[in-house]
Length: 123
Length: 147
Image (cartoon, rainbow over all chains, first blue to last red; front, side):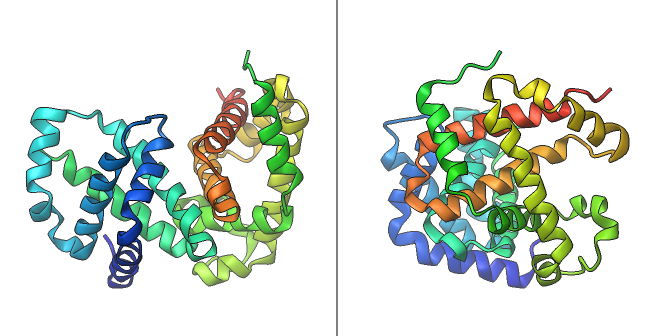
């Protein structure tokens, strides 16, 4: 699904942004209309950054989060799409021209795969 | 009917007042063709779309992107009646161009990303929400005459 080049692009972007994970997470969540979620946003972004380090191992990396989302949180998967979109917008704001169409495409694919893995245990 | 606050109206007019139509239009359309490659099916006659670089430098795509963006001016000038404003264009896209209306949202999302990249931190959550509300109304109007 994701080419070697795309995986590298994604890894690099998240490596670069890990120091500002808190800000990105807060921005992405705020865009959803929520308010008190700055630390929660950081948690989410760090989980995504972790997944980006070795995309071929997503199912292994996310196993505990899969269980959490399926049996406890039961977040409606539509919300994953909304948050992914806000994440892309936030990345565009931070990276400007650096968020090229290629990076955008790769990131969109990655976030979709991430969301799909997260929802795998739902049914 | 869609209600707009004074703040929302001013956010939209400001975004469009400061817009470089050639730059943003071409970027938004080429981004859509790159990120969602199936949309290329509507541009078979536009020349070389073989890879991202070809798409980014294709003059037909650039011109068309600019045209589409100027098409949004109509909505900016008629925010209280966007549905009627796009009735004809909706028929065109349905009967003549046969564009699947799901694609309107894809282009809208790409335009949002391009504007976000330009505005950086000025593209706050409030601005984003307003801009997305505006585009959602446009997208809905364009899909209205499909049967």
